[in-house]
Image (cartoon, rainbow, N blue to C red; front, side, top):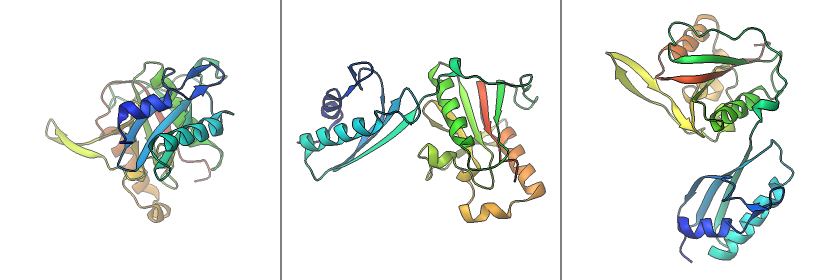
Amino acid sequence: MEINEQKVVQVLQTIKYPPKDQDIVSLNMVKELAFEEKTISFTVVFDSFNNPHEKSIKAKATEQLKAAFGSDIEVKIRAIGKVNVSKMNVKSSAPVKPPKSLPGVKHIIMVTSGKGGVGKSTVAANLAIALANSGNTVGLLDSDMWGPSIPKLLDMENARPGGKKVNGKDVIIPIEKFGIKVISLGFFIKKEDAVIWRGSMVTNALKQLLNDVDWGDLDFMIIDLPPGTG
């Protein structure tokens, strides 16, 4: 059977999400559906991180798609979880006031940790997605020059931002994913080069990503900061 969007959606409509007894298409859980001659790929957005139904949903979807389009097709399914912002118990100081150079940004949330490898970037990415799904305009800045992981988390490792001129000034255009404007140092540097970034190079790079990016009007800017041990 020839692969097309309508037929793929019809197959996915047979996959039910047990907690709500509805199919994953009706629940708007299927995002970024794409297909080539022998490959079908899409993202499934669950209502929680590490959802217990993730493996079974992916297995059933793969099984049904192969049954419909042939066992030789490749099915790529990416799963992400949403964060319920209203239920988060977060203690913080006074809100960070955006600098004058970011007049279109209403609120800035900085995500940091005392050491690396504790899930800081995962929290930043899921918080940004949750805020965007709640109807907010959101920007996500990955400023961890020693190990930018947002591109990997959001499946954007091969992405490269474009540029344009605004009032005679060269600015960077953020890449949009899941309704979020995303910029990461990982878009501009090689992984093996990150360790040599020091002092003024780091400061200047962060200033450029804040001030020389066309962020536009944002309700929230989420900044994934480097770990405190950096």
